[in-house]
Image (cartoon, rainbow, N blue to C red; front, top):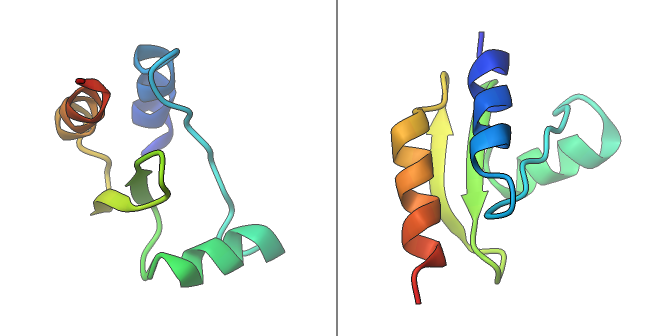
Length: 76
């Protein structure tokens, strides 16, 4: 299950990135799933401050890649 990985990411990225969990079956989650081309669940989408997709992973989130990408985006 992806939940423990996402729980860990939420703790590790506190203060650096906001983690939002959306249900692709409800109205808001469904609209965002269409916008970002979600075809499978779970899907992890990492956006920069301008709303551009910087990383997209389908299936179990790869923690190290996500953390590295967030750090790269945080660098001046």
